[in-house]
Amino acid sequence: MENHTMLQYFEWYYPNDGSLWKKVQQDAAKLKEMGIDSIWLPPAHKGMDGKDSTGYDSYDLYDLGEFDQKGSIATKYGTKDEYIQAIKAAQEAGINVYVDIVLNHLGGADDHEPVTVRKVNPENRNEFISEPFEIDAYTKFTYPGRGGKYSEFKWDFQCFTGVDYDARTQESAVYSIQNQYGAGWEDVLDTENGNYDYLMLTDIDFRNPAVREELKRWGLWFYQTAGFDGLRLDAIKHMPADFYNEWLDYLRAETGKELFTVGEYWSPYDPQAMLDYIDATQGRMSLFDASLQANFSRASKEGEQYDLSTILDGSLVSVRPELAVTLVENHDTQPLQSLEQTVEPWFRAHAYAIILLREAGYPCVFYADVYGSAYTDKGNDGKDHEVTMAALPQLEALLQLRKAFAYGFQRDYFDHPSCIGWTRSGDEEHQGSGLAVVLSNGEAGNKRMEMGAEFAGKIFSDYLGHCDREVTIGEDGWAEFFCEAGSVSVYTLKAD
Image (cartoon, rainbow, N blue to C red; front, side, top):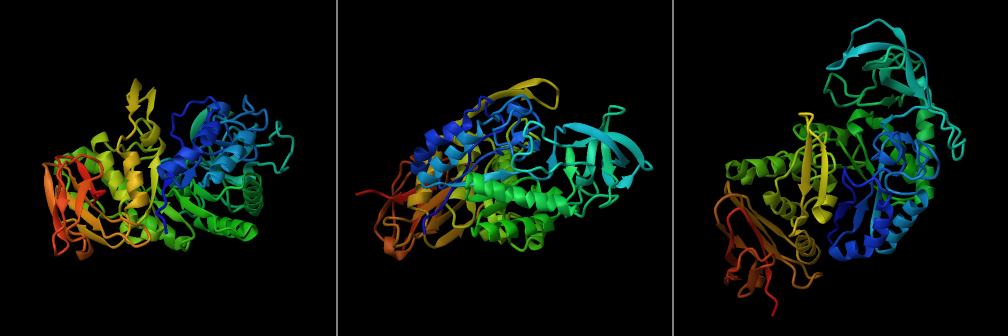
């Protein structure tokens, strides 16, 4: 089997010029050549901010850039036809396409209505701080611009658990909607803020059976329309796990497809929460390894003070490797974003070596590390900040290493706080495969590691070109491998 790699094909600040779907078509063949086997595309539906929306503020799930709604026909990324063409182009190039599913909330309602609510303490959502009273809530989604095409379902307050705005008084707060399906929040696993069912905008109520049926109908329509290969599920910690159990079972049964699925359960400092979610969903989906990403961020900021031998501690990939999607960065962790948790440029090659060249996990590469990014946005201080994220120069080489060399038995040497390494012994299927990795977060380092007796007398050199000394494997299959200060070196068989 070949090693597979996913690419998150967007970043938060991608320009709102409708060009992304066309760019997929242009780039597909080159991405495959680079070593990319699947791409995760951003939400394709119309958001409440129209062409300025990233898609995470879902307005109309059926509008893939087809209807004149929220001030535009196209979404930020392009039109429906361009989206479908982009998926086909990627698949024709041999790349699987994973689509982004945002079902926790809706935003940008078409009208408000009188709704009975109770105000809650935003820091303890289980604590009601008012008796029931009436507000005007933006909970009516009727989609006049779509005119009932694809679905005539109309959303109202019976479809939602909470809102954050009263149009009558123009007050912002967290309001728990009192409807026939419940007077409080839904049961979710995450206990931050007491109960983290409510995240933002108008929170969908999955206790309403009509909502569940509509979202299942939509999911099947989306598959039949776009023909994708897999799914990325947004904000799952804010939703009851049993909804996605039912939804995924339905979709897989109706399509007859496996539909690889990865969920965003972002709890970097509570790895047990991710394991609890895996138990609740009985392994139906993979999860992003938020804990490993947090380790990368910390290691990059602490430099030599960070104990590299602990880099995998608490990670999902260390305990459930078959369900771990590993990553270095994403659209939420990039500078000035809501979950900002950056990995400093000097450490990105180290982090990518760890996710791309080891046996365990399904690695996901970030768009900005391939293409770079430059943008200006407001920080927490209210001031504008200019950000430049440079593309990672070693990334293409690391992807080629993964595709051609990172196979076979793995031996780990995580036995020093500032210099670690591992070897892969290669396999018969991939001629010339096998490698040795050494990385340091301090001084120049070296590591005596075993490649295997079958490599005795063979000469290895650093594929990345960071270290110019060649290494000859001893008769016993062992050798001393080197790396420069604060650097990473990957040794492969020297070409004859």
